[in-house]
Length: 122
View 1 (cartoon, one colour):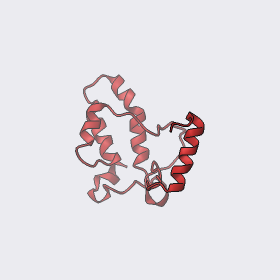
View 2: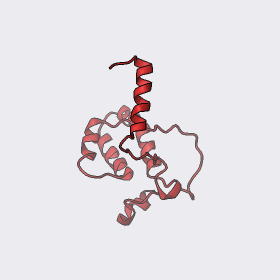
View 3: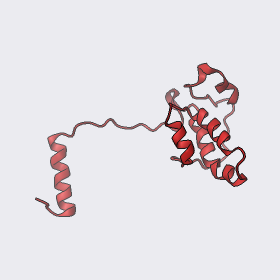
View 4: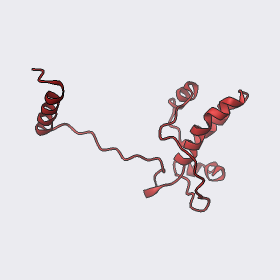
């Protein structure tokens, strides 16, 4: 994987793990927690999962070994997020429905259900 991402042309492409794939039964968090210092640094520029792994490895240098241990779930998430899944997207890609302007029917439906749940508030 490191060789794949050492090529600048692969920066935005997910790693194809079909050759190296194996089921190792690891737990991977869906939404990992970042150290605030790392979180602030990645908001300054678009960061790929692989670049985040490099930032994490730099962050944990010269720190207590417990820091590296606490970052393990996040580092596992990063490796999986950098891996190619369906339709050439990351394995961790979550399809989100577009936000649309609610119709009158939806507003009426929601109002009725809120009235039933909370009591009529008019």
